[in-house]
Each structure stands twice: as structure tokens, then as C-alpha cells.
Length: 112
Length: 112
Image (cartoon, rainbow over the protein chains, first blue to last red):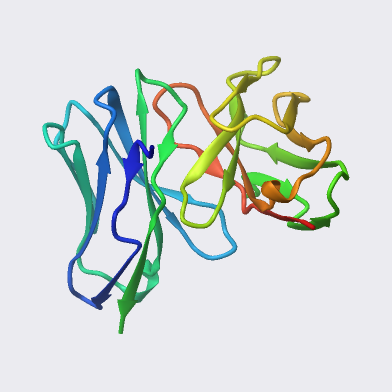
């Protein structure tokens, strides 16, 4: 059973609009979350993180929101750009561990 | 700025053949990891090495062995390849603590 779920395999948005990527988890012990972006034929690259002591973290156009009671996090990209088109993975770890559990990914397409 | 380098990038094997995937990082990171990525699934941890001289099993270790040759290098060996091991393999490294992992560009392995 997947502990980290990304229920939308794909998402399309218009350039300049907001992209919202969602991630749900089942393990209440997860306390550190990351988002990675992956282009074809490349490895994932780190985007943004959030610790369970926060409910929001921002870095430029990227904001991650964490709702611990719902075991849900989301990544907002504003404004979306064509270069944001990639697969986005959510990952989680527990007890300050370095072993992350990854979701299956969401493919984002930003249309010009 | 090489980061994490994986070799080879592509490989085709026959069932029963053996193969070693190589990984090297130049960031002086203590921890290194091997993942596999299959369609519709996130990255799954095969083995990791928290520091030079130590290795531990991850979520899917069966059929694999690893060697942490030194601080820079972490290899993954398939002793007797099976078609179920057809996948894209990613190596990653990180510093200790709550630090994101840095990934190589992957090895595409097909086993016929």
C-alpha cells in the first residue's frame, strides 16, 4: 500500500496561471516533506521542502502548504511557465531520517 | 559541476547475466542511495549507505548487492539479472541531517 499518493497522474495549465499539485500521505509519523522536479532523461532535482512544524514554505514562485490533520500537502506554482513542464514527485520521511518515501509523480504540462 | 555521475547510461542484459552499476559523487556527501523507478510508481529505495563503511537495505533489496567503495563511490550489483529488474536506476547522495538528496541522471537497464 502506497504511503505517499499523488492521485493526479497529469495536469495541464495555461502559462501564467496557477498550478496546484497535490500529495496525500498515510503515515502520521512523516515529519519532513520534499518536492522534486524531473525532466525526461534527467534525475530528479530538489525544489522545496517543508517540516511538520510549519504549514507553509515559500521559495520564489513555489509555495508548499502542509495540512497535518488531513495528511495532505500541495505545491503551488505561480505564475506557471512552460519551463515548469516536468514530472513532480512528493517525498516524505520520518524521525529526521534520510530514507524518503516517494509518490508516483504528477506530470505537469504548462501550455503557452 | 558534475554532482552525481552514473555509468553506464543504458544497458541491455540477458536473463542470468551479472552487471555492476557505478555511481560517484564529488560533493563530499556522507550518505548515498540507490533507487529504482518503474512506470506508475515513485522511486523505491534499494539500498543506502549512511556513511563510508556502512550499507543498509531499503524497501526493495532482493536481487541486489551494494558496495561503498570509498566516500565518493557506491556501486549496485545485479548478480543474476531477471526481467523484473528492468527499470531506471538512480543514484543519489546527501549530507547528513535534513538535507535534500542530489540525483544522478539514471541508468536505463533492460533485461531480456
